[in-house]
Image (tube, rainbow, N blue to C red):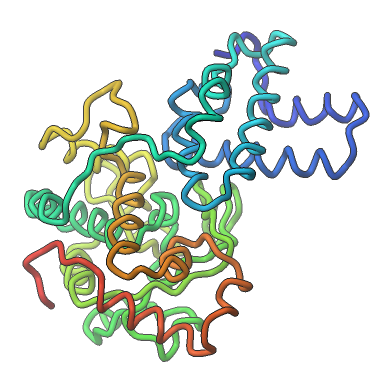
Length: 346
């Protein structure tokens, strides 16, 4: 899509906005939205740069926004993206603006969810049953039972898991981070991990896109799946001790988003849920698991606040509307309503 070599098209666009006399407030707003779009492309879709994004990639991002933002916010973000592509096309940096058709349809579709596969818990349970490799099953079940993004899963370290299992702790000798003390069977998903930053002694290749740090309950089923994987987890090649390590060609390396995405889509292809060139409405991907988690847990609990918290979509002001005993409330509601996916019981 790009016609010339522009290492950072967003920076190029922002610099031109500066030359055109745009205010600092405008520049900050554009950069925040465009960098968020850039991170979504890389972490969720495997698209390396906005220059390589097509109409479907833009639509997918807008659909992601709908799950957490108001109609007016979605419209504003879409207009920023449209302005970015329109300008880069006008100055000859990009060949085309993929947002043209998106904007034409936006007004009538802004509050409608694009059709997606409507998979039941029973269908997903059968899908998981066909995944026998401990790493693959652990990745899929973790995504399905937590609603976290693929980049957030790949960024997890052993210290981010407090599993109530003395044998696991003894085998690895990595104590859980301080935020997990006295919180057994809990995952910690940090909000301050960004691509290129060094976290826990390792440079990261994916970003966590949460508004706040999140404590995610690990129920009996997920605990059993993680224990089974940890029994065969390779020794890591990183001092950060990543939770999920490759057991294939890159033995012991932190699981990368691209590898994890290929793993998921490979299993989805096996059951006819994925085809090359298929749309977001047709294909089952790691991002579909986030949609599945949101839909089914929200329907079961009727509590949008807790589901949004687990997804990482809310800040402290939302949590302040609940009781001071927030952590126990989340676990209680979660464990009473989360669906079962495997025959394991711990």
